[in-house]
Length: 230
Image 1 (cartoon, rainbow, N blue to C red):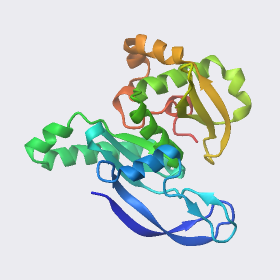
Image 2 (cartoon, rainbow, N blue to C red):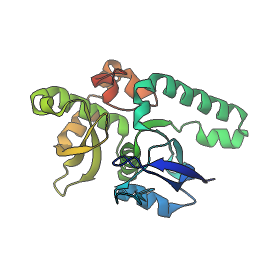
Image 3 (cartoon, rainbow, N blue to C red):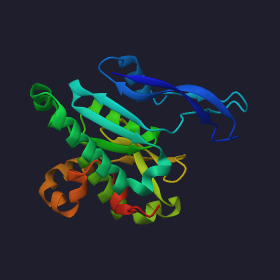
């Protein structure tokens, strides 16, 4: 089921506080209208009463879409440096839930791989990749290989992450460039479709080179680009 709670939120521009109703958990099968808002990038959008800034509050939430085999845990961006601890907690929760679930429920959910994301924009990306039928692990591998092959291109960006937005008519994957610390969108990058195709072909090698992308909840190229240092 979905749970909503009154919450005090703070505007990132002027720091004024106001109350908003935010989801603690969201059952996508029951509230498809909220899924559409996530896909559009307007989920939980708050309008600051003081300065007029529109923003999406950072908080913790469970997104469950059982019919799509999707289970996403969102944490605030500020929690990312602790991803190793948080993802272990996610794994333990998943193990516990499966351990106490009725056999028929456990059988239906045991192949669902939980995914951990940080920030509203990365929740949007995770839902968009699932909606587009893109394997998030291979997409992150493609991102990782492209970034490492084009370090000069990204040198002036500082620590950043690529966030999938859409697919062009030519098959290129449009990605926003977000500053890793602030989440601010600083540009756009077109990931060639061939990069994803190459990742699919190289999967056995990639599984050995980047095992955590294939085995752990935090499926992000950032864990290999920056680790837990930022």
